[in-house]
Image (cartoon, rainbow, N blue to C red; front, side, top):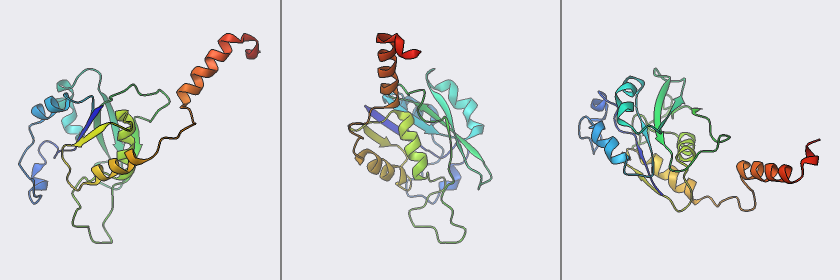
Length: 185
């Protein structure tokens, strides 16, 4: 499957990235969502203020997730996601609470970009995309490169061979109970 993530400057906030080497002004979100729709699964980070303008541009089967954080002025950011595969109802929550990297007491690395996503956020997003080994992933706004590095680490993890998913266990249990109803007593 082809997967993509877009974390562009949020509408009206591009000026915060003027010193970034690939700065190109405000992002055309209509064109961006059109590009994202070419992928099997995708995610788009945005601001709460922009959500009402962007959702009508998205297909009906997207989900709005929430990245919750308490150490900054804006305490949550929406993530619009179109999973590539069905997401198990016992799968990831539709919100995650994880703080962004803090640099109050230490120097920021040269690769730091405002809005850089932490690894737990990335792994949560990969789960929501339904990502599996063999999938390809495009980070359309690589910024610091943190999301691409998180993808490389995450996809390189060997699958847990021999351990069925919770969904598979439930299906097997339901099948067994249907074949042997006396076990329900």
